[in-house]
Length: 319
Image 1 (spheres, rainbow, N blue to C red):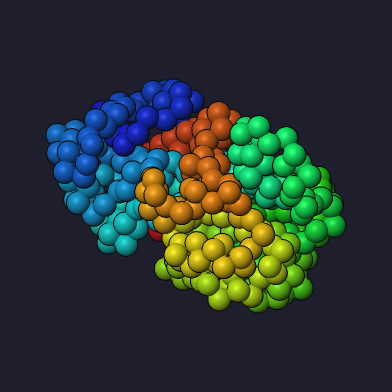
Image 2: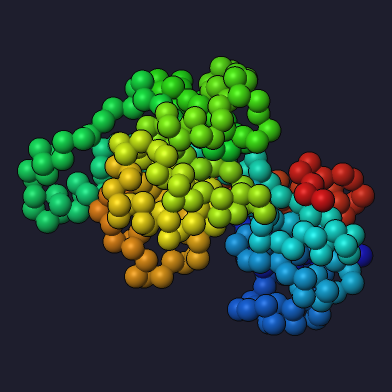
C-alpha cells in the first residue's frame, strides 16, 4: 500500500519526484483555513503532513489516526505543535541545512544595504534627487567593522564566514551554548556575551530560532545599549523582537539604520511604521526563497519523511 503524503503547500519538483520513486501518493491541500484542512485530513487519512508556511495544529494531527510524521519544509518549526505531536508519538522533522546559505547571503545583502543607506538613497534618487549622493554623510565600508551575530547555527556560521573571509569584518558570535572566548571552526568568529556584543557591534544580526526562551527577548533596553551608529538586521523571526520597541528605538534615533526580513505578524499591516521609515530596508520573509534553497529543502524534506515511514531514523528529528 502506498504512503499518503498531504502537502499543505506545494513544494519543488525534486521532493515530489523522490516521493513518487518511493511508493508515495501525493495530495496538495486546497484548504484555506484550519477547518478546511482538518476536513481534508479526515477524508485522505494521510501518513504525513508537510508544511512550508502553514501551521500544523493539534486539531490537524487529531484529524487522522494514520499520521506518523509531521514535517517542516524549512528551518523554523515554531509553527508546529511539537508537544502535541510528541504526546501522540508523531515524529517531527525539519530541514536546518536547506536554505541556510540563501538566508546568510540575504543577511549580507541587508548589511550592505544598511551600510550604504540603500532605502533612503533609492527613494530620493527616484524622485530626481541626484544630489542625495552628497546629502547623506554616513555611508560606510564594511572592512574592519564589527559584526555581531546572535545565533550561531547553520545561518549564523555561514554569515560569519561570508563576512569575515569575504568582507574582512571582525565577527563576534553569541549563543547560550558557547562559552565566551570560544573560537569558531575556521576562525570566522569569536564567542562573546550578549551585553558586550551590544556595546561593540557596528552591525547586529539576529539569526536565532524562535523558542520559548528567545520569544520577545530583544527589547528597547537592548537597542538602548547598542551604539547609536549601529545597524540592526533581523533575518530570524519577527517575534524574537518586541516590535513596538524596535519601532520606538528607530523613532528615538537609537540606530543609524535597520533591516528586517521578518515581522511579528505576517503579512504585516500596511500601516506598520517599519514599512514607512526611510532608514529601514524591508523584505517580505523572502531570505530563503531562492530556487537553489527550495530544491535542497524539498528533497531533504522528502528524504526524511520516507526514512520515518520506512522505519529509519531521520537526519533532523525535532522530538
